[in-house]
Image (cartoon, rainbow, N blue to C red; front, side):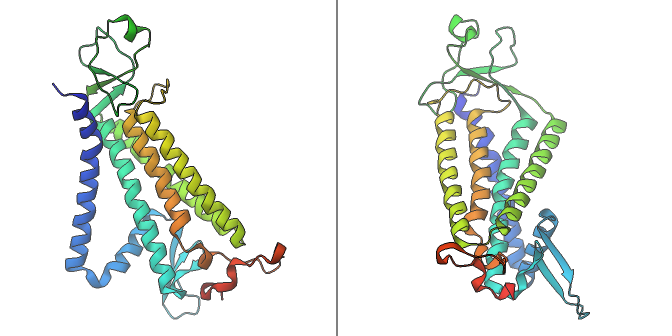
Length: 282
């Protein structure tokens, strides 16, 4: 019979390894056979995945050339900005693939609950002990401490549920794409470096606080009584990755070169317009 460590390894490491292997194989194939078209492939993937953010359109001058746009901004005006923007969204997409992969994998093969039924022999239950990562000791579901909730538990049942796994994973992925779209649109409304820096510092603080909180919950230092349909440790990793991928976009992308200035805006205290810089804005 599996122990708690086996379940945690099965839930987390397997999809991580599969996604990592898939990405590495894709990169190797591109490098071996499509090296000269790597950037075009990257643009093709991003414009189809982030279709509300990236567009590829023909120039209006009738030359037949195409432009690659981020929310209407021509990225081709600056190769460094284009490269950094595409790489930033590509890495965030890989992080989201890890999140969706772990979600799909768990919902496909495991049913997780946080209540212990002594008459249900199809589940294997473990106690959650403060300061320990993941479930620890197997429990007797008939014991009073388990029945009255004094000892928090997590139970696993092996299942195969392709419908639920596919539906939930696809829904979560679409929600993440919507969040990326909102974040991108919101930051592009910023006009000054002061506001941009404030957003980036706030994002960094939120990332740290959320990561610490989820790690404390995963290690059972903080007990959450909500009956998640997921293993707490897996859920914590997923939330940290979602926040990290969004934060990565906010902190990594060359927003100064992307943001359009408001020519009628007066800056207080000599605050510089973000737009001072950019050939993209000309």
